[in-house]
Length: 470
Image (tube, rainbow, N blue to C red):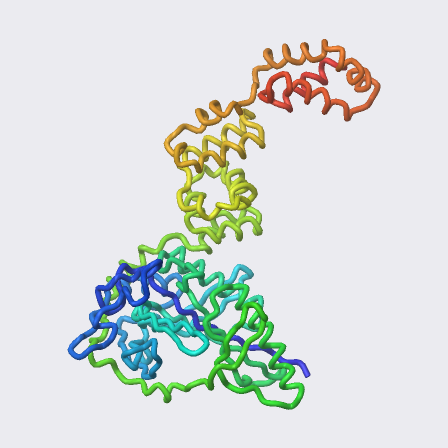
């Protein structure tokens, strides 16, 4: 029997605010001691009332518009009740009944559209670290502002699950909504997978794989779940509705606990926070701040850049902003330098934090076009532009100091060619070329390059040699 997989994904996106969702505590706990970024509000101590962070609301509007979603003029907070040691309040403040972000969609590079059911604001839980006989609690992450994006069950393959998560990550980082640091948990994916016989009008029982933090893990986890559930169904067994954990090392999911339903959380309106009421003018004013999105760059550069190059570049929002500033006639040359030279470097991510000036890059492409720099020299100068000491320097000056500018003066080149052709060691090569052996021209060009200390324009040298050896 063949089965159709149906996949829905919930994505938690930590918002790039300075402070937490309901208190004035630092929202950046990277490198800080456990339980250093907490306040009495995070503990919900008696008398401590939450106060909504307005910046989180503004970022939620941008996130929603980045996903082609409607923004609700009124949204409300609710309490989601459960107790774990990493949630000392005994509940999570979220938006269950009236979320801020309504329906929309995310379009994949392939053109497939994945519908968004909604996205809501909520405060994150803390973190538990488990050891053999005990666990430690770090509450630094409690009430970190996040939006939870809930997709419709429109995904039917592991590849589309991968591509959806990656495109969602691009949208959130391009919009400036999140730092998008997957390693530090800025975005986490909960993936629901169910199987049903092909042609069935009902979905199968779903299993939810929790807290995936890479696109590759999402793809592998979906592949594993499809295989696991297929095997169970083939054997006449039932799939249990549960949450499962993913082990990247073993490539397997393992059962954790039975999946709660909404009624288990005893949702109730949050009594300490009033509704969020947004005017249409406020929503449009904030939404207008949305910068160019991946779809805009695909439209802008799709006719001049190869799709595979463009998709690589779209993983870097700052790089795309820079590319949009480049003179249109040089975009292809600069894009190729970024993909073939910079991204091949071990420190490429570090370099991308501080890109060269637009004029430096335009000048570099122009020098290459005018044959003032060879392709090899162009690459060398390009990498030097990322040196902090070169940031404010003219590209041509850098190339001169490196001794990389090509000699294009035909008179000067002809004199060097004559010098080389007069040497005894080149006589046989000259005779061979005149006898029809084309490949020896490379040897003669090399001799001229050597004589010019690598500064001669190879193509100009070859033209001169051919004329002289007719």
